[in-house]
Length: 167
Image (cartoon, rainbow, N blue to C red; front, side):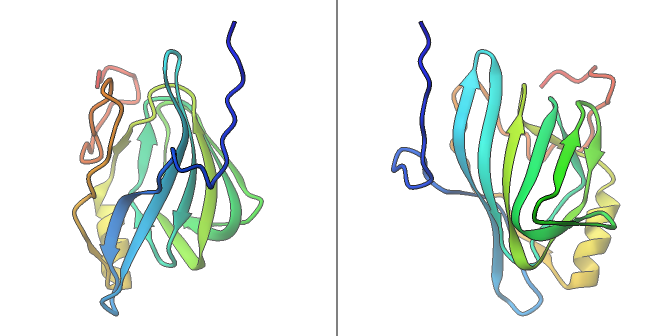
């Protein structure tokens, strides 16, 4: 019989991973860091705790599954909508949101993807314009330790919402 699994943010078994980086206009480096608290193959799902450094920008994207985001502290812009602490965002499968830009305090999020958690991006001109306006340079994605049953799709830009794309 299955048993509950308990995790704490201090668990040594759950390391912080930098998932995105950028060079800010002042030369400093900003990141998004995540702790993958639960990552299951069957059924597929991912729950994570994320920290966005102030001003961090993330492309407009969707996931290959429904996705829920809850802003715990700080806040971020999702396109032109400000999402302060306490904001709940539901992203249905096939939908896209963003680009995101963390506020002056950064942002702390709790996220759950209920299926294949990998993302696809769309409308790259939106994130390019936002980076240019903020004087931000995108840096290469840091390597991630994905489970053996998944491959990295962070550079994937187009996925038909119809679900015709098979990762």
